[in-house]
Image (tube, rainbow, N blue to C red; front, side, top):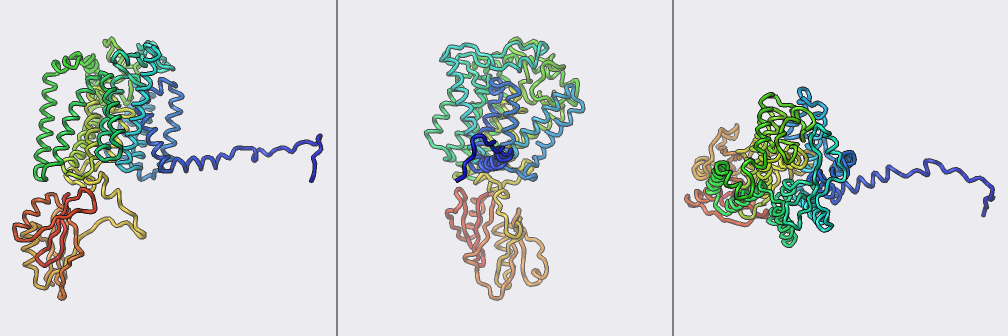
Length: 595
């Protein structure tokens, strides 16, 4: 054993050996984030940050919040690991973001527009990543957890202020007021007024009762859908719904109350559609939409009385004054003043809008459609309206096709879209943060908006696009079926025409050679093509069979049975799928499913 002399110099430690192993730590962290739990945690935190962003800005200030947001974005990228193909935005979303970026060229506030366009593009990318990186149910559940946490934080925050009798509390870091300066006209911002024990109104962690009430209603929608899907327990679901109802009552937001009433009526109508036969679904759907339109017209016609009942002024708390100013400046520049998101109220023209309002200087138009007209002109307005209408139309088509046993996820998409649209009539948050995030995510999750006449049955039954559940083959991906060939006895062409054309109502098409000369025939309807070819040693196919999806299963079954052919209903392995089996004129087995 060797001994070192006490006076011997110690050997210097190599800097490389003494350093912290950064790469292994990063890799371990990346693996945790990329795991199923890590991805879910990142998705939930993203929702909390977007929904409660104003509260975090009040708590830590803009620089610290910007650092937190950047870290969250990095975590999303590391966790979800998107491919470049997955980042491609939907057409209208990409056009809107592109227009916002181009508006830097003519903006009256170019630096603000540049920052706002970058933030809009970032939120768009994050929404695309998190929506396409999860199933529809997974996304809905992460949205549920994020909103649940946001609501809990707001309740605890208000309870803390009320218990300690702190009264009106200003933000911990007031740099938002300092940012506006004297030109902004904002001298004080109340984070909370401490009125929880007085019956409200309360503002929550976000510091504004309308967004806090919107969190409650959005959470109620998602909770209701997940309870119907049996993804959360009844106890947790009812506790969450009661908490959301409590917050809604204590925020005293008339606009959210009006939206809640409409959403309840629309939900009852959607549930009724599921219970009627297919031939009555569209009739009931049109009736519900017609009643909704009439209700909207009557609401506008008798708005003063309705606002009086809700305890609000007929000017919607000075919103009409803001709207008049916005319209005036929007008409000055058809191309818009440049995208800014939240208004830079210290710069023209935003410094001149809403100056008559006594209660606060508005930082947005309190109407997303007027706001986008002001910022991006008529082109931006058309794009936003088209996005909302097409999204509602494509998701409502799934709801009107749904039957008992089908998924309720499309109903959630419809209710969220409707609430975002109604909120956009009195708030501009559809253009920023959580509002824009949710709109883009719904676009990515829902059916293609330009295919309103084509309904994917997989989305009706399971809430997932058929193409999204494709399994990559070992050699290549199979993209579709061109036709199905069925056998028939020699000389059976006329009998085939009688059954497939006369009974099923398919249209005969030209057959390729040599099939036609050998006595074969071909039929087509919709996306289905059937070829029937004669076989000298014909034996009916009693096990192998095509499964054909049709729009009206009951009508087809009635037509087949009227001609004397038996149909047998049976349970499908896929929950919610209605089907029956029958045999054609030659004894071949056929299966038909309800779309």
